[in-house]
Length: 205
Image (cartoon, rainbow, N blue to C red; front, side, top):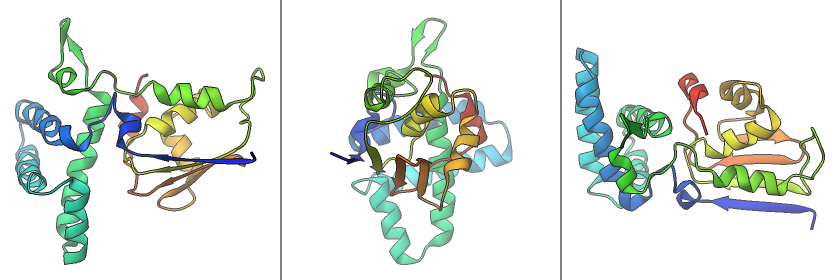
């Protein structure tokens, strides 16, 4: 076998990111956080946008379906506004402190146990040749992912760019909006796009 292609859906990030059935409840937790955190006019506008977004998503199978409908309706302004909402939400999911004063976070009762899913590191480690201080895969790898999150990128960075920032790693591997070349042996296609913010350099496994 000379080449392997992995197709990743939401379940691949289950320990850190919501599935369709838990998305609304977990997003509403984010809303609760914002309600306490914001103290400006811009922040209150964001809370209002979140309320509008999740009210619409609740009437659809998923937020992807909702965005697809907006796309076909030509509602570009709404797409941009709500994509910003989703970006902020996923940043929150990647960085939220899961324990405060020793008490578990409410998200832990909704399926979340980590900010980064540890199975990604296990997958990448298992695919690498056992050569000290080298990162070479046994075969050429392609990853096709439906996920917006940074779990896969972060794990690849851990092995290929361990001392650098995630932002640098993403920029150096970007070939176009949804195609990334990690090395001559590895590429990623993000079908839905990818969230991106320098604050995510602070992600910890």
